Image 1 (tube, rainbow, N blue to C red):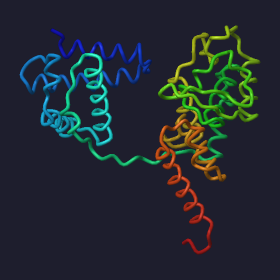
Image 2 (image 1 turned 60 degrees about the vertical axis):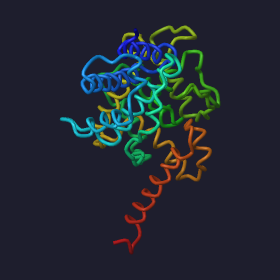
Image 3 (image 1 turned 45 degrees about the vertical axis):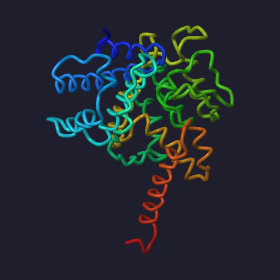
Image 4 (image 1 turned 90 degrees about the horizontal axis):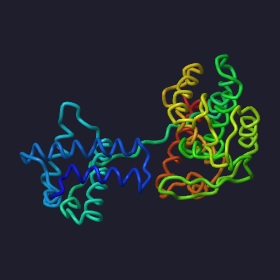
Length: 306
């Protein structure tokens, strides 16, 4: 008889191998599901079988959420919502792949979570982040060119880190547009600004490694593929030198791309396409940011604002 723990291992393998989820996603989902099974086993007084997962009541699932909400380290509404989302995905796998549906899950509602507004950097701050690597004496010239090329891609094309690092040698030199595969394996066409193209060409001109067409374009110091953590650590160091807040992250450059386009008159539908958002409501969060920026500019400049 299949146990719930064995089903969990099958699900995580499915996420990694068939769905091609990132290692971080698999780790986060696995952590949430193990906590879930651990609670259910303690609640029911023994190991859970696969059939047990189909017979769980809505009350038991709500008890798990209450446990997360009031435990030694209570989860925020956003974290609770993420945990419940992971469990819904787990149960969907049990239903579709292991013929173990649980209709009670549809009766459980997660906490209401107010979407947080994106926190972009200003245009000057974005330019400063891109220029700052050149002032680091401990970096080789090709590493400086690489870091500037990656950051220019994030800001100039609105890419996620994973999207920028998924480019291969055959993608460069870049043309006027580039095809990007984003979340959910959805593809989109993104215009390439001359500054982005020039930054990539400058990096390639100094790259000390010979790459095959299918090799990842951006390389680490020893020649392996560049990792997202390197980009995050680089921006963390740069913002410290520039005196920028912790919100100045690589993803903030993507937010800035959208916010600055909106401020320049681009329409939401176009920005949605450029960012690869599935829903327009996700893109509409940038209108709040732009309105806040306009209000701040008004308060700082209008003679009657005080």
